[in-house]
Length: 90
Image (cartoon, helix red, strand yellow):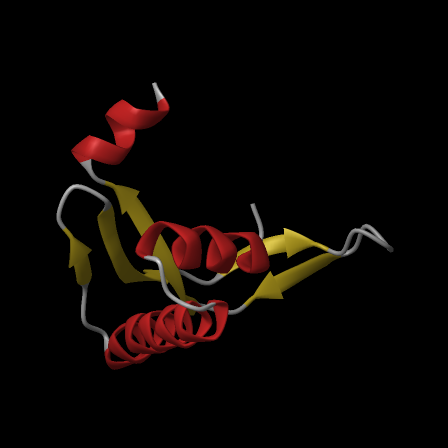
């Protein structure tokens, strides 16, 4: 399912226009992104938790040349599924 299909499904199930569903989804994703950017966790009970973790610097290999290279430390977004979501996909 892509973003367009998700908007269509939300609009149909909530009996609202696609424009309203698209705006609601956009606002939801923006709010999650802003919270993660501040370093906060976003927990949707039963669905899952979005958080930010720090990835340490490490050595890697350039796939084109095969030469060793250093990969810088960075922050990455992480998602841990909640119990209801985990059960739904089993």
